[in-house]
Amino acid sequence: MKVGLFGFGVVGRGIFDIIETKKTSDLKKIEVKKALVSSIRGRNLGILTIDPQEIIQDKEIDTVVEVMGGIDPAYGYIVASLKAGKNVVTANKAVVAEHFKEFVELARINKVKFYYEPSVCGGVPIIEGLKKVRKIDEVSEIGGIFNGTTNFILDKMTKYSAEFEETLKEAQEKGYAESDPSADIDGIDILRKIMISSSIAFDFLVPEKEVSVFGIRNILKIDIDYFKEKNKIVKLIALGKKKEDKYICCVEPVAFNSDEVEASVPENFNIAFLKGESIGELKFFGQGAGKYPTGNAGVQDLIDILEEKQYEYPEFNNRLIKDPSLVVGKYYIRTKKRINEIMIDLIDTQEKIKDYNIYTTKNITNEKMHNILKEINDKNVFFVRIN
Ligand code: HSE
Image 1 (cartoon, rainbow, N blue to C red):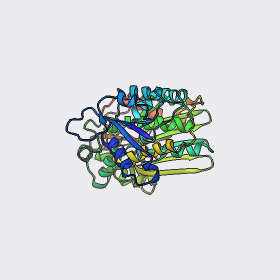
Image 2: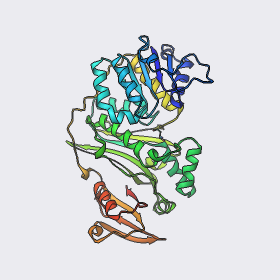
Image 3: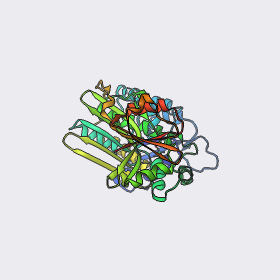
Image 4: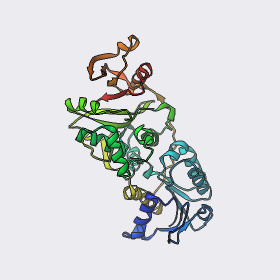
C-alpha cells in the first residue's frame, strides 16, 4: 500500500512515525510515498511536496490520509482523491461533519473506501465499536466525554479548586487547547464528533441545526464548589439518543455522582459510551487527541483497507424526528439576573451565593433549558444538567 499524506503536522507526523517503525507485518506493507506540506524550507525529507497534484495524480498512491484540519482546502483534496479512485482516511471532524454524505457517495461511486476513525475521539475506537455493535444491535444511546481540553480544564478546576482562566492557560501551555480555544470550550469540536458518531449509531444524517450546544466558557469555581459539596463532578458531555423514529443530540455540562465512571475520567482523557439492545452498555476509555493516539487510529484505518475488510457504506436510511423529551433532567442555573414570571413555574429551588442567583429547575427538557437561557439573556449565565 502506498500512501499520500495531506498534512504533516502533529498527527501526520505521528502516522508517519508509526508506519516507519515497521514493527508489525502489517506495517511493513505500508509505505508513505508523499506528504503535502505548506513549505519544505529547512526540512530534509524526500517525501515532502508542496504540490497536492503530486499526490492526487500519482497512480501508485492508492490511499490518502487527510490530516490538515479545516474545510478548505481539505474538502477539495478529499473529493479529488476519491474521484481519482483512491481510498481516503481522514482525521478531520469539521469536514466530515459538513460533507459526510457526499464523501460516502463519492466513495461508493468510485468503488473506494472512506474511513474517519481518528476524527472522533482520536485513539478511542468508537467508530469501529459502533460499526461492530450495529451489525447485531440497534443503538439507543451514544455519547460521553468527547473533548480532552475541556476535561483537562474541568478536572483541574475540581481537583485544585482553580478558576477557569488559569486552567485554560495551563491547557494551552500543555498544547491541549488551541491558541483560539473556542471550538473546544464552546462545544463545537464535540458537536462535530457527536454528529458523526450519532449518524453512524442511528443510521441517520444528524443535521447540525438540530443539535443544541452549551459549553463551559462561563464556568466558575463557584459552580464546581456547589457540586463538590453535593459529591458531584461536572463534565462536558455529548449525548445522542434514539427511541423508535425519534432522536435527540445535544452537548451540555452534566453533574455526575462522584462514584460514576464519567466522574473519574482524569486529565485530558476521553470516554465514549454506547448502548445496544443485546450488548447493553459499552464504554471506551483513552486518549482522544495527540500525535500517537490519533496517529494510531489513522494507521488502524489503513490496515483495515489493506486487509480488504468488508466495507459497509453508511446508508443513512432512517428518517428520524427530533424529540426533546428524550433528554429530561433537573438543571442548575447560575445567573446575576432573575428568572421572570414566565419561567418561574419551571423552578424548584432558589438561593443566593455571593452576587449570583442559583436556581434548580423541576424536571425539564434540554430544549426548555435553552428557552430559559433566551429569556434570561445573560451572556455570563452557566447551567448544568444534574444527573
Ligand atoms: N481539541 C480536541 C480535544 C482534539 O481537546 O479533545 C481534537 O478534536
